[in-house]
Length: 213
Image 1 (tube, rainbow, N blue to C red):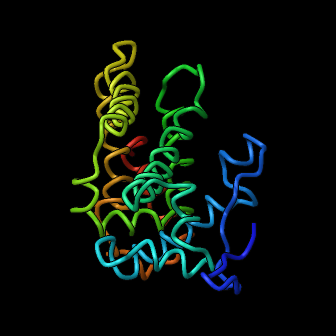
Image 2: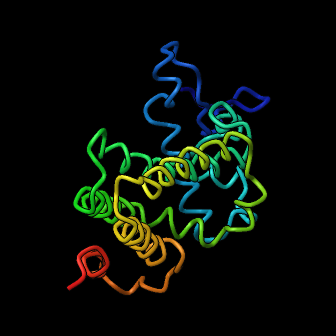
């Protein structure tokens, strides 16, 4: 990367991101540039809102020009959707961890345990979504809907598995709803609880649902 120059040829001190010639590196952004853009955008979108954050502000925090941002993302909306995709990947990765294992209350409890850890690790993404719901609704696209459909279909297959007793399937759905309700749909309601403590409380609640006394 090189510093941009003004019309007189003097350096502006603003860094331009250039192709590296390495397709793998360019896909992720040379030197992790793409991920750095997302990290800074996450901070700004959360602190001041999606609508009040400009590409120029993101670029300035990185010491880049806007042109450098456009090399990696076509718009501010694309940046937001890439952040949203990170949250999708948390859920999909948790489901992938089960693999071909037989669905039981025990395997579901293992999945929920992992999901609690992953969501707490990415708590900033949850807060981002809670504070920018209107922007997210406007930015939904066909690909994003397909991602939703895939996640929903996999959950539906688990909840509809007729090999399991109805009571077990209801408990599985209830445990999943409890975790999502406590960690995703409550905004900052539990922000004062340390992550480890909150995770332990949730595991106790899930245990009460899946293994009633």
